[in-house]
Structure formats: C-alpha cells, structure tokens
Image (cartoon, one colour):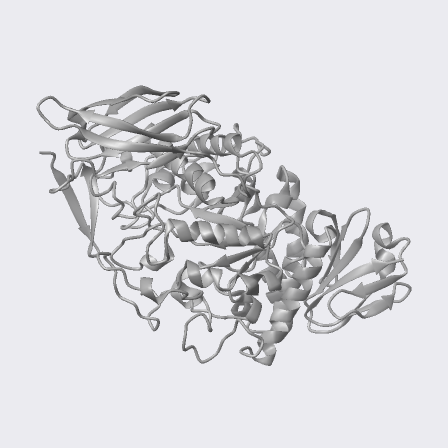
Length: 619
C-alpha cells in the first residue's frame, strides 16, 4: 500500500509528498475525456483511465480507423494513460475498450466518437468586441433548485456572507442576455464554471476539482452549451476562463495522485512569491524563479507540474474538448506568469492549430510595461522564444487611467501617464489584442477608486470604450457599483434584481435610480456607437503629448475620425483644434457622440472639468 504524508496548515489538509489511494475505488472510476469526435485536427488522443488496480489489466480495442498506440503505466497502479490514434477514415460510432486480466471478468468501457457539429464556434475575440465580466454566483439566480446540491462539500447558502455561495447560476445569466445585448456587450466572460467541490469559498471557481464538468450548482454541461448557443444567436461570443497553473486541493486527481510529479512537491508548504520579475531578470537567482512558478498559489490550490507530459496532455485536451463541445469562442488564461513558459507556448500552438480563428488573452498582473510585454507573443523584447500569447489584461493602462484622474499633474504624473503607457506599445506585436479594463473580481471597483466622483467615473468609461484594444467591463460597473477589495468579497456583491424577492431590480430602468440610469445610458450610448463604427474598433490611434494636464488622442480610418479629449482638471479648459492639424485638417465641425451637440472647429473647444469628450469630426 502506498503511503501518504500530509501537512496540516491553517485547518486545510494538503498533500505534500508521495501518492494517496482511495479506500473504496471502483473497478473503473472514470475515463477522460469520456468521448471525442472524428475529423479533429489532431488524430492523437490520450485517455486517462482511473480504477482500482487498473494497471494490472491489459487494454484492447478494435474499431475501423482507430488504433491503440501505447498504454502507459505510472507510479500509481490505479491509473493508465492510453494513447489512441483516430484516423481521418474513422466514422462516428461507439466501440468497446476492454480491460482484461486472467481469472477476472473483463471491464468494458464503450467509447463514443461523435460527429463534429457545425454551427458557430471558435470565432475569436478581438478589438471589435466589448467584453462583460460576470462572477456567476453573484449575478443572477435563475434556478433555485440547484442552489444546494446534496453530496457536495459546501452546502451552505448565505447571501449575507461574502464567503458563502449566493446561488447565482448559468440560467440566471441566460435570463439576462437581453440586458447585456441592449448595453452593447458583444462577448461574455465568466469566472470559471467547472466544478469546484471545495469545502469553503467554492463560489469563485478558481480551485477546480473537475476538468470536464460544469459545477452542478451553476447548471450542467448541457446548459452551458445552451448559453453558448443563446449568445451566438444574438451575435455575441463566449469566453471561457481557464486555470492552467493550479487545481483545487479536492480535485479528483489530488485524492489519488497519478504520480508524485503531478504537482510540485515541497518538504513543507511553500507559497509562490507572486513576483514575476525574476522570470525576466538577467541577474535572477534560480531559487527566486523556482518559487515564483512552482510555489503553490494557496494551501488549497496545489501547483501543477507542467513539465509532466501527462499533465500537459490532460489539460490541453480538456480545453480543446470545451471548444468543440460547447462552441467556446475565446479563453481568458488565469495567473499566466506562474505557468511553465514552454508548456504554455506548446499549448498555444495546439489551440491555434486546431482552431485558427480562436483567440485567448492572459492575466498578467505586473507593475511595469516591460514585464507585461515579456509574456506576449512575437519575441519582441528578445526573450528568446515565442510565447504564443497574443494579448494580455492591460494592467498598465489601468494604473495609468487611475493616475490620470487621481494624481496632481506633474512631469510624470496625471494625464501624462496615459500618454506614456501607450508610448510603450511599440514593444508589442499588436497592442490592439490587449484587454483594457477599469476593474475586475480581484480589484477595487473603479467608482470607489475615483472617490465616487461621477464625472471622473464617466471620463474613465469614455476612455475605456475609445482607447486601443479590447474593452472589458466588470458586472455592475455600468450602474456604479462600488467598494474596495479589502477583502475581495466586497467587490463581488450581488447584482440587485438577480434574485426573486430583491427589493430593487437594477436590470430595469424602473429599478435604477437617476444616477444609475445616467451611467447605464452613458455606457450604452458609447458602446452602441462603438459597435456601429469600426473606427473605434480597428481604427488607427494618434495621441498628442498632454498639455496643461489635458490628454488628446484620435481614432481614425478612411471613413471616420473621432477626437477624444480627457480633461481631469478641476476646471473647464479651452482646447484649440489648430494644434492637431494632422488629424483635423479638412473637417469643419465636431459632434459630441453622447449629447449630439456640435461645435465649429474654427473655435476653441470648451472641455468641462473632470470629463472625457468624444467628438466625431464632420466635414
């Protein structure tokens, strides 16, 4: 019997060395992926098979076009990794995979090869989109029947607790797609929906315990596909949130580790340093690099050993499976810098080969532009290899807009931060692939960051929807939800109206107060204009060095020119169009896209205090 040593830390049981075994493991506990498709780009498929001493059995299969290539036995005899080849000649159908041992009854698993469905999938997300981020547990409860699921470790439901589940689900999101579409949203990103059967704080989704199953408290695999189909019918897209770096401590493989190096093992619990700088530091100590990428994210989030080829294959196949099964259009990659760089490049090539139009962007939470660029594709900063990461979450532009609106102006402070941040875009292969945002589920809400100053907040929203890249809005930002991330749960409050019996329904104009409707209408107006005018999606950008703490930039193409002026000062300013000859020549008027008011370009433009004006130039 394999022995397990465990370490008790802060009340959470963590595996630290060797392998564990289940006392009552079924003869065949699972096969993953449970089914696949014919006609896929990659003919190779590796099945992970788990069952009581399954490695003692011989494996066989017979099906036209399908070949059993190799069977891998690993440290834990309860696992087999079975390599099969599905040729182009294979037809959809079901065939038996037999597990045989002399003197015992055969175990038979009927494996299905499905026909690939047509329809919309893998469209990719780009700068023409407007992304809306939802934390599903906190958005809307469309099905009370799945609020508590018997047999799962966390069965509490308490909307008054920031740590407990609140009951939001996939059906609640489906019920409010009209609200999102009306606002101008074109793509939906949700924090992870796969099963998180953890004993506490399972609502956030970032400690997966399954790879192929939607958490039943959110719905089902079938309902997730309904969500994708519903989005596609509305001309919208689905972004799935992936976590490569770690799994939950209760992940099914953690309960019976396939092998010691399935995860990174330490003599005692070791947390990541969360410092990405050593990864690019030419003078870095190897130990600093190791602790960054191999340290655990938390005691309940074991760090995967991504140098292990079985880990690589298992996770890559699961991600391809979701694209094919549900019709996912893009991925957001959590905690990107913590991953093994070689694996992520290999993973990126596999995804792009299977779905050439598919796109993904990585969370790169760092404090400087060069650090951020380091992780992007193209080897543009002499990293030495191509990461295959097209875009990132642009934290640098977030710090810049916050500085522009909150700092006293100076040589390097105030509005100049926005200018200086975009100056660094020369380092990217294509900065238009970056995702720009004001807040998310880990950050203080921007309305609070600007001290609930509505004019400054609107100025930030206008910048978000007119600068380069892919704009992303966090749920509730359109109505000025507020709070600081101390702790995170304070910025993960329920969207009022998402639960039956809520006193107010913020999904409707009648349920919002005047200030909330003003913000919602403001976002909808700009987002709708953006959706209808490619100039704000794919147009070129020209910016001017800020003068008197006023930042001016243009988006332009062959059909339209839009002038954007951000004045974070406490007083109105006059801006002379004559300074911007390269972009205003040939135009006679400027039309405010929000109010419809026009000004002659022969006069100075009066820009109100703490505002961003979006002006379409007219001839």
